[in-house]
Length: 431
Image (cartoon, rainbow, N blue to C red):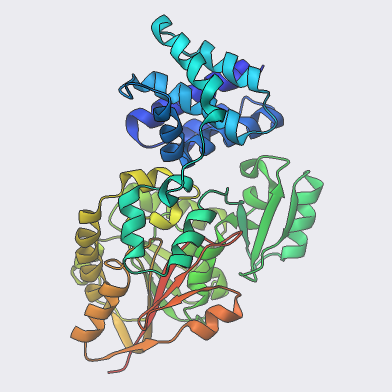
């Protein structure tokens, strides 16, 4: 039984190694044919190997005369080393023998066997980027503008799985009712500690896509950091709100719920395919206040001539804050792209500002940890725009139990059990 699970994990990790990306639909299709025990095993093995790639490769390379081995062999070795060092429930003999079976090249079977039998004798590394399995250049970059304890906190939490969090649809139900329904379906859930609308899944029974809370529009899968963003917009019913980069629609639909589905919300995106995801969420939640429009946020005023009370710019970014669910973002990141993205973000911000009413609030957010895309974008915009007032968000975020860093322009949320790093900045139009 375990051999088949390992083979499925191996195929997923080979795909990840080739593409540096793992499609969650591919993972879900594999998980759907497994029982609960095997699902847990596969998820821990696959995500564990992706999270600890640098560390696993370091251990492997300590035992190789020539680290230039075929990718297929290296993937198998990563799986074996991860099981030996980090999966206490797996017997050593099983980790070794089953990994060797994955290797088709007879010339490498002995090498894999030898490396795995010796790996526990290798003293652990002392370099922090290896201990926490992050690219060295990225750790050095973070250290250039973040306190050491913050860098350590980010890396430590990035080693831990992120629980699934739901946002309860307050228009039709409560957290108590959602938890009760989930319990009847065999799912254990508790209140989230940050968003007053959040429910944290502790143990899954029925797959969420089949759960009544999803199929009947009682809740939406949305992380707590993402839920915090609309809560900072001071929304009221009957406002006109623009969500400029709205897909896939989690924040858009939460805005509608917070406004009691009264008012006008315009959700735009540059991709019609992605806008269809927004539309799907809107239909599932039976919301009537959301309208959808195809528009390039960098040229927004060419598509929209209206004015809005509130605008959300959830800007496209390098997504480094999503690494707990998407470890690949750490390896795909390139420092030169941070500047390119910041220029795009500045254009979106400038265009959006022109559509904001006097006295209105624009909330800028990213799910990344770079100074170029966060502090420097807002600082440059505030310095070049005379009618901008930066709103201090510290007290608001403290009220939600969110810890982080205030830079004078925005707030970087720091990770914990259910939070991932997000940067938020609230700007008021004064004239």
